[in-house]
Amino acid sequence: MRHVTLLEELEAYRPWNDQEERDRAELLRRLRSGEALYTRDNAAGHLTASAWVVSPDLTQVLMAYHNLYDSWSWLGGHADGDRDLLAVSMREVREESGLTAVRPVSPHIYSLEILTVDGHEKRGAYVSSHLHLNVTYLLEADPAAPVRRKPDENSAVAWFGLEEAVAASSEPWFRERIYRKLNAKLALFSGEQGM
Image 1 (spheres, rainbow, N blue to C red):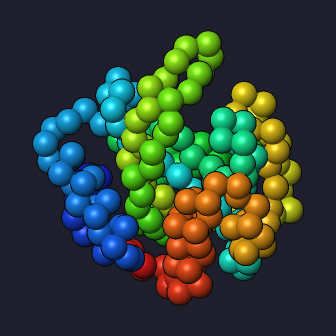
Image 2: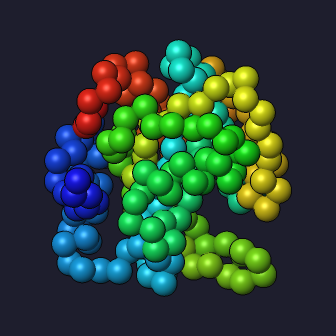
């Protein structure tokens, strides 16, 4: 069975709103240009994968209190050379939450976002402001399974009701533009690509 490339996935993806339409166009432009996006060597922007981790009944969301952003947020991280962004999102959830049993609700892209990252210190070195070219996947886990924090990245991991998860974020742009969108898509989720 042939593996579908990220470019093919993005070409087939149906944007949810104007933000996704514009971000999809920019992601496609950058991928088609041959720009190196899969590693952090591209200091201006690189690919990341996030996860909206939900309970099997779709009523709860897993969030981590992110040290860098000082806010409750979704889980995810850098591709770091891995071209399978679904695998990246699952790996990041396992690393950041301690969950061992996490599975995709769908193997398809759930959401797209280009995210700005302000300049910051990381492990004693300055990281310039840049873009995260982000692909989000909808994953599922059992809220009864044990979770643990990852001290170098987060100070807590917890399950929230859908609206509680949005309210828990102290980042207005994420709260209003991203997390509300993810929940709105979840309310209509049918398991098909491009919700």
